[in-house]
Length: 238
Image (cartoon, rainbow, N blue to C red):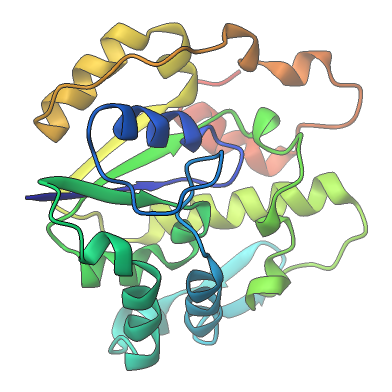
C-alpha cells in the first residue's frame, strides 16, 4: 500500500497531477472538487492556522520556522489532519493519497505524520501562478504575517515566495520528486515516465493544454517581482 500527496501552491497546476492519479486508479479521497482537491477542507485550513502559531515573521520577506522544526507536533494538529483525511485513511485501495494546495503550508508536519509517503513537488513559473485568485493569496487568513500591501499581485507573489521558502527550508522526505508543470504539459510522455518510476505504478495520460504555459505573456498587469529570481533561475525559467 502506498500513500501519495502533492505539494505546490495554488494555481501551480496540481489539478493535472490529481486528475492523473485518479485516472490511474489511485484513490484521492472523497468527495473531490473539479480541481481534484479533497473536500471538505475546513480541518486542513484549521491545521494550517495551528501550524502558523509557531512561525516568526522577521520582517520583509523573512520568516523563521525554527520553532516548527524543533517542537513536538501538537495533538490538535494531528487530530485535524486525521479528520481531514478520514476518507483516505479508511480506504482499502492499494494506492491512495490526496491533493489540496494548503498542504504546502504545513509541509514540515505532514512529513512527520507520513514519513513513508511519496511526495510530488509541483512547480510552475511563478509569473503564471499569480495570474489568478487563490485562497492562499492572503497568508494572514492562515495566520502567517507578511508585509501588508493592497497590491493584489504583490500579495500573491509574496504567498508564492513564502511557500517556496518553506519547502526549501524543510528537510526532504525519503520519497521526493520535483516536477515542473511546463514539462508535464509539453513533455508529457517523458514526465509520466519519471513519475511512473518514482511511484511504481502505470499512469494514465490525460488531455493537456499547451496554451496553459506562459500565459503571463498575454497578461497586461505586472507578473514579475525581483524576489522571484532565485527560484526562477533554479528551475530554468527566464
